[in-house]
Length: 464
Image (cartoon, rainbow, N blue to C red):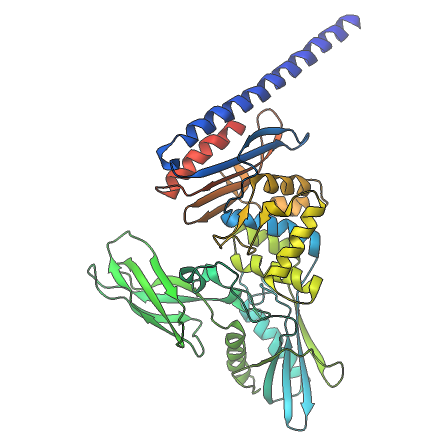
């Protein structure tokens, strides 16, 4: 027994020494790798921040510039996700209600939306356009009303501003720049089918949009570029006209080249689509809605149909997996609406900062202007991001959030990319059995993003 105890003690001591040596090696390797990274010519005018902690002990493994606020790009979605879990709850759902009122001037169809960004989305079977329209048509048929003289969208408490501060004109008319309204539809985006010429410089024609846009036009100033040059086409919203312009290039010899844009009015598009659908069922409604800020009256209106969104846990999954900017902006507005009865983005961000300040994170480390990271005006610290991730790892809803994170370079982490910005933050379990929590942001690099990514991966590989 004594011999066994001695051997066991020796083995334990060896393991502890080995673990300590490995941990020390990780620190040293990270320091060396980061020094080399910073000295790379691609970073000569950049600023980089890397912060890493041990998930179990909270011990700082590496720290460089962790308290400097940098543009986070889509790693901002981690902050919005965790804030939504805490302030709304993982089981939170949106509800879009439909009611009718029979008055002396005829029937009115009233839509009471809630800011649901999944309404009409193709990502769940129950939210798809066809299913939503079919179930709504059946519900309308059951009311027995065959004609409505007015469609009202109740926008109480929801402002008309769908574009957060700092979004660029080049972004806001394209699908990733779709902003949230109280009534959203098909993730507020549409597809444009384009046909290019046979030679470089030939004009590009617009074949069609899917769906067909109601009350909104497009014109092409696109030209054909060399084969293999990819999608360099951007849609620009007009300043004072009912049509947008597409500028840039697509490759030659394309007969059905698809790009996607942001709907200027999802509510108008939904009502127009519903009108066309109901016409085939013998029910008439106007093609244009009337929006007002009044609440649905308690009497005289009959709610006959409610569309419920997937739970927040499921929304967060797609939000992070596909980096859907619309979802982030909708969540911030929803937090504002739930807490202040106003959908103002600034108020939502204020509530988010207040919550995390109560968890010990200074407001100065979360200087945010949107919920998706699309704005280049955001400034957050890697220290704050890691603290949020540490907090998340101890919560009952953590499994859902962890599952939502994509895998890059063999690591569970959210990526972020806007012009001049690249970032990653998440979790990784190393060979030493330890789980590391990290945030890595780079601002104002030069050269290609793909080249920078490989160099960032080389640094993060020291955790493996």
